[in-house]
Amino acid sequence: PVIYLITPTHGRLEQKADLTRLSYTLRLVPNIHWIIVEDLSRKSDLVTNFLANCKLPYTHLFVATPDNYKLKEKDPNWLKPRGVLQRNKGLQWLRNQTGVTGVVYFADDDNTYDLRIFEEMRYTQRVSVWPVGLVGDLKYESPKLRNKKVVGWHTYWKPERKFAMDMAGFAINARLLLEHPRAEFRMTAGRGNLESDLLTQLGVEWSDLEPRAEDCTKVLVWHTRTEKSSLKNEGKMKTYYNTSSDINIE
Ligand code: UGA
Ligand code: MN
Image (cartoon, rainbow, N blue to C red; front, side, top):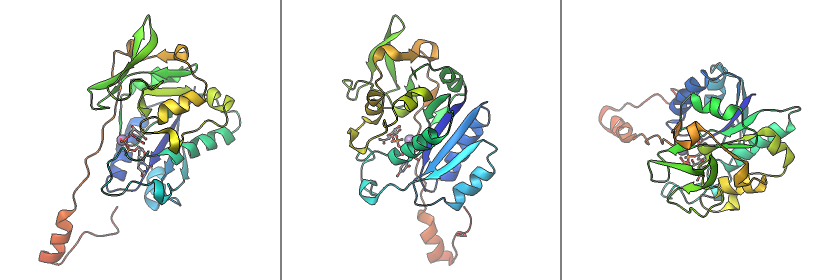
């Protein structure tokens, strides 16, 4: 089966570095199709050129998050959900293709993926699930199992969510998305509830969940976050040396 990876991405200093690292992981994965969706009102030159050289089968889409849904510089990162319209754009593209079969995974551009996670998800019947490292202010979050079935969630934050998982912790058989053509991520889902809200719309029950990664005992994906780079010496370069970095260099 093909794995369709839907990756929202937004412009920032570290974007090209994060995408480069992710693409080098994906190059080692057979049978994937990368759906990369920019949070912008057009395709950027940076991502267009990057994809042209990335040696992966891809689809390049874009949709801008409206200003009222965007985080401001000083906002805490949990205030507004990120990547929502972009993932939905990817879902819409998939549903408009004819004869799509395979598995869909929402792969954020800054996480770290063990190659084995792609083989774990490849044979998903409905929804497969596994632990995610370095998330929720814990060493990891994970589905809790009894007799190899999901019976709850190892998470500090809102454990009462029906599916208390990070975006990186599950994959969906494309058939399920086609059977529920209106299911999508919703801005209104509430804080930290995007994932659970989508799976609920797909009519998923705990009994449908397929635990992976050795009965959820192995961490094969990490919710890493790239440190924001400082440009504080750019201004000083101008002041003291009357020079600055070339704006044409990505
Ligand atoms: C956590 C979860 O891991 C995300 O899956 C979830 O979307 C997010 O919280 C949320 O609350 O909405 P986190 O690391 O905090 O993720 O978020 P980012 O990595 O900054 O963003 C998630 C994805 O959306 C990334 O691929 C990023 O490039 C993209 N994004 C971010 C946009 O498309 N637009 C933005 O303005 C910001
Ligand atoms: Mn992230």
